[in-house]
Image (tube, rainbow over all chains, first blue to last red; front, side):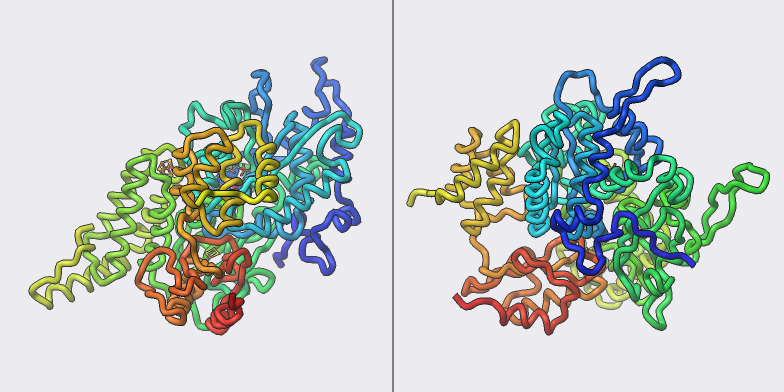
Length: 472
Length: 163
Ligand SMILES: Cc1cc2nc3c(=O)[nH]c(=O)nc-3n(C[C@H](O)[C@H](O)[C@H](O)COP(=O)(O)O)c2cc1C
Ligand code: SF4
Ligand code: FES
């Protein structure tokens, strides 16, 4: 039987567990910080020495920890790209923008266990020689910002933060910085611009990789809230024990946000890959199934930017056979293990680990129109294909959901979407195009039927009504 | 009328500026502080913030027009933000917003924030509020309300303190 495995959220929902530091300390809080600060350096076989910080960085690399914000990039590898020879200060920013539609996991950590994040951050900062760090929290979480400020003050009062932390000579400050309602601030270079007091216009990579040219053009680490929490547990367990959680190349645990048409929407922490999409949706330990009498229609598996999956799809996944060879195996949608690699092989992504379920009562055109409106509203406006294309697709879908569809709209939408992806400064372009590409390709008949019905209606009522919106 | 910021707010603002090695970084935090106190960010406030940070007013103005949370006009005392995005929409947030509009005599076909003539309420659709498991979600001023029904919506309207 699949079940939750709570590592990050171990304490969060326990009766009587509160967000204040005394409670956190009673539950072993800040012990891992002490352990990390006391790490001994190592002599390597080749005669080189590893500093205590390098030892912890290596542990994070060896743990296999992958970013929980969206891209699933190795945290240890990201840290290894940091330019440590530039002589410039190194900054760390915790990405608490949590704005990918469907995602509500970082909120749980911030509201219920803020000290866990702060401990993870302090360890990560120390391991990377960071003296100044920020938590960039989305503007619509005012209570979260207050809680974090209170928690930071408590940590400062106990000398886990500030000057000469616990007598080790290490100085660190962490401040909370609030966004103000723009989704694009979640993209790491947009976030950095925003933290510099500017419009959140993402920077082009290369050359502006944060690890080299980040905040104030200094080397900068941007990690998601959940990612930074895991660092604490890697220190606690050691890399090899930690890596036993989850599945190979998909280690540790992950908090899945489940919403839409299920009986028990909510957040569920699992060992990565140890539960399938079907279990997450249908098992009583998780989503508890669809509402009575309803059948599955579609799943958005990793936040609204990920490509939609259609009920009944079967995917070819590479699996290790008995002979040790990787061979393609047929895996039905609901049997997909919920991890980074399986979803990627299924042509989509686990993204921010947010699953949105749609049942057979839903109109797929309406759903895509809703998603597209989000991207039309949130494009930062720097690149023409994204700014114009996202709006254009949304307007066409608006027209389709207001009785003015055309049979040709399916191809029309695909054409626009194909001209956005790969032609923009940041990955928002893909985020806007992918839902359209996948919805239209997989549910083509729904789009064409909608267009055909509307066209028939119009043909019957001559002279044709020309409305302003029919020009899009 | 000249624009003055109360001493306690200015003390808070001066402290915020110390959080950053480059003053300009404090822009958003200053705008939040100003908006929390005055209810909106006026032209005078923009100039004041710019002067405080050694910037041109345009540097601040372009933030106020970019970031959706900042507003240049005063809004209602109770600000109702209904989440529009998919999970909430599936749970009926469209009808919920219509309900708020109907009850308050606002036009549900209009886009953008709408304020009642008595200045008590502003109703607005916003994008995902990161609590989709509790859809439909409504942010009432700083307080997040989960799984909001029309009954709860009526309560929100009735609870509004009469000033
Ligand atoms: C359009 C867009 C929006 C994003 N929004 C978020 C977000 O809200 N939170 C987040 O942690 N990462 C977000 N990301 C990913 C970040 O750019 C970055 O990869 C991440 O914060 C790195 O942290 P991680 O390696 O720990 O996952 C977004 C990316 C894009 C392209
Ligand atoms: S892709 Fe879109 S969001 Fe990203 S920089 Fe270009 S216009 Fe802005
Ligand atoms: S969709 Fe409404 S809170 Fe996320």
